[in-house]
Figure 1 (cartoon, rainbow, N blue to C red):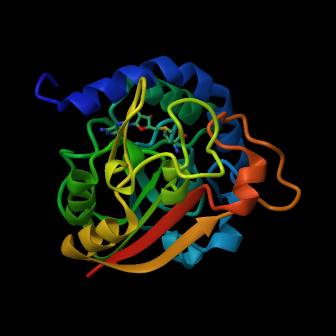
Figure 2 (cartoon, protein in one colour; figure 1 turned 120 degrees about the horizontal axis):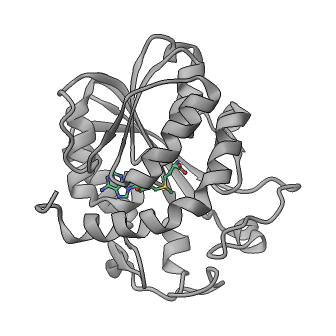
Length: 253
Ligand SMILES: C[S@@+](CC[C@H](N)C(=O)[O-])C[C@H]1O[C@@H](n2cnc3c(N)ncnc32)[C@H](O)[C@@H]1O
């Protein structure tokens, strides 16, 4: 563990502290069993990020930066065989707690998603919802996801939209104007966490260079009746005007 990059250690310390705030929301997501995405809970039946859900039955999935592991629990309910990877012991302790509570067991690895010990070409899906997708260096975790997937395997990840990062000050909610330089958002050193928001064109090229074909790119909006989120970095009115979140779907060649 001593050879971990600075940002990985930094983010593990941050998530050890944040894990108590994600405990109850994690339980609610485990309990719901309905797949939805991001802060606005946009249903998978609208988004279709995972493709045909019936195909998940019997498939091997890996969640990179799984946190409390609720996405993996949803995939398990569809018949998949999930594996979760996360760097923070406190988050994995919550995931294990919910595994016992909801009776859904799957392996959890305390590792960095930038460099796992998992065997090559052993998964059909790799997913990340605000996990590796923002906390890991994409130049490391995207090639690692490519290594883990079998040919034809699907990578699905959700992150803050590029426009929301461009509009986000150090503190408070995203503004209705640009506050960050496009070329500086690739690595954002916030007051506590270090996040990665590779711009759109660079991400597209990285995915292609790592052996993926991008098959979908979905910008998420709240529904008309969606209530405000508990997250202070994004507000509802802003998110009706611009997409706060985006999902990438890519297939390994
Ligand atoms: C927003 S949370 C997890 C998202 C998950 N969908 C959830 O809400 O439970 C972000 C997670 O990324 C994990 N993380 C941060 N850096 C990581 C790394 N280098 N490798 C693996 N996981 C990492 C954190 O420990 C944290 O659990």
